[in-house]
Image (cartoon, rainbow, N blue to C red; front, side, top):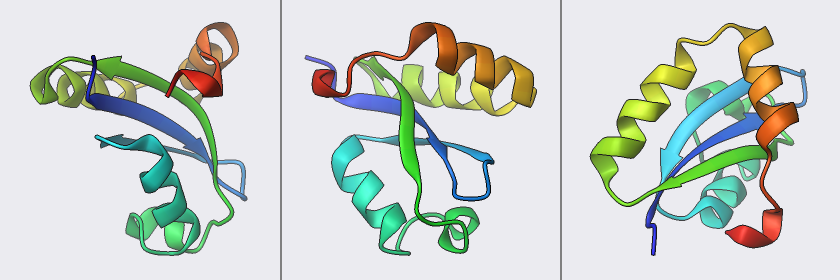
Length: 89
């Protein structure tokens, strides 16, 4: 079972935030409670719009870095074409 996730949030101001976690549901709650990343604190509520799972932290962190380098249009395309079911987490 995969224990490491890369995720993308859509913030209230329609920007994206990409992060890493071992528990996407807990992390989403933290972001929405203002306890997540500094970037999201003033941009709540946030919505989990995309995630990928990995077996190792190293793989997930590498992918997080890669996605963070994407242009907005690339992130949008990734979200629109590959969003897994929210029930997969």
